[in-house]
Length: 255
Image (tube, rainbow, N blue to C red):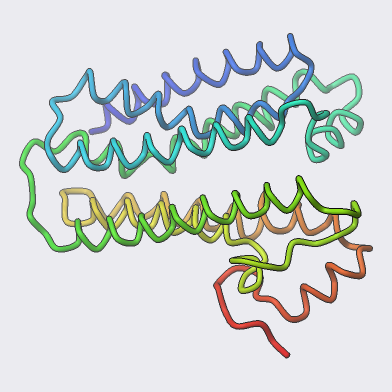
């Protein structure tokens, strides 16, 4: 398995380097968000052709491809016709003459590292030749499905809201967004916990727990909720929404 982990690391380095060059050509770093989901698709394709697939690995592969392609398409459509995402635009202004180097290291190479860690369950299942009939496979699949629906429906509801809202300062507060301020992030975290649970019965499966822990930490404390909510720090409507609505886990709104 160590050889496969190393191979995936090299693949990811090449993959993010290509996207980095593309970002320089089109002058926008937010394509890294599109590259994120497609990166896992690339990993699955590589593993499929280099390791004999089993029914169990095939299920994990299919679920990963569905998640990755859906996410890439959504972000691509969301970005179409718009300027660079505000987070990346801020870094472009702040980094100045070191923009190119810091973009490669702090956007693409760092993203590649996290992609490497989060792909551990896919790597684990690809290296196991003997299948298992553990009920955790079904349990993980159900958790994945719930997460996928939360992420997909949340993204779709937000897309419709942004398309039709009257004022720029209006805040999405209906649908799944009534119960959690970030249903899409909650869904993405569930997706990876589900995939981890599916591979948990396998040899070395426990080590794959680094995958859901990493994505949970990133979305809850680093690049997800904190960066996004900082944008609405002075938005009174959002601050009122924040007081009554759970940040992550879906809950009934506080009165």
